[in-house]
Image (cartoon, rainbow, N blue to C red; front, top):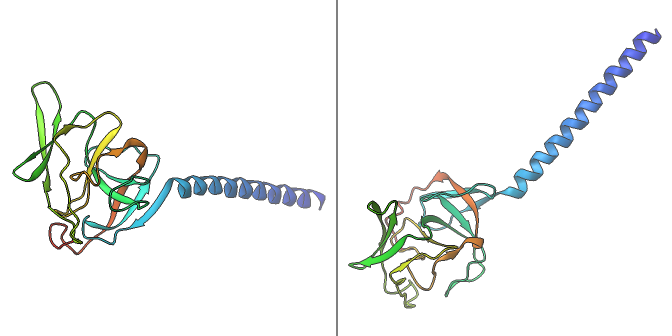
Length: 186
């Protein structure tokens, strides 16, 4: 009988040791996920998704959505933005026929030019908007945009280029919006 009780105690102890290790491990994973991941809801038609999951530990590439925090703008301060990463240091921003383009130089002879969108004269509230001047994006700064032609983004001096430290995460779209990002007036 002592052998049976001894074996039962050892099995019970092993079970609880494994359970505690599992719970601690799960807790550690959850703490990393919860501190490195955020869910944001998009209330505007400027982006094609209604929600975004943003992960801090990932490095964004050109065309990715990014989370932007603590970026001062002329009209709004303290807001959180999600925009598309459209221009990197060394890329050329230029305006042609009231439209903004970002030219990416891949080699000395090969460049790709991306159309960002048209420029507006004013905000919906009637505040003047000034286009970002033709420039080469400096080291430590990025050009961000949204898919909507009326988006408030780096096309305008009032928003400007975004400093590297203000880009906090790479974001992934969830739940496609029923509203076409090219229509409407944000």
